[in-house]
Length: 99
Image 1: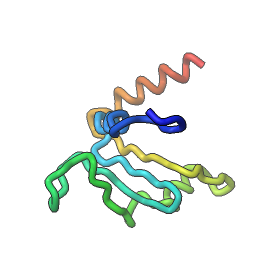
Image 2: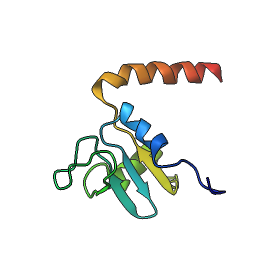
Image 3: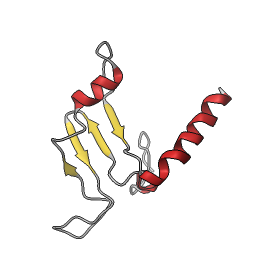
Image 4: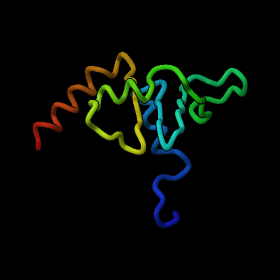
């Protein structure tokens, strides 16, 4: 692995598909989404980025952070799969109790 890089071959990022069918990435002007379902044009899932202009938008994300906050350079939004909402809530609750 090269110095200053993280991850290799997308293996770590692909784990987000355990909890989200469509993860979004907003970074330096890029607005993309990945989809668990195969792309209709190329029949590949997980690895084909898709440019997005619809929700969520950076304005939507700014509302979450608040009007006084400067947004981070990179934001990852993970809409949870329905069956993952409760387990994720439980895990996050147990983390906050430890600190």
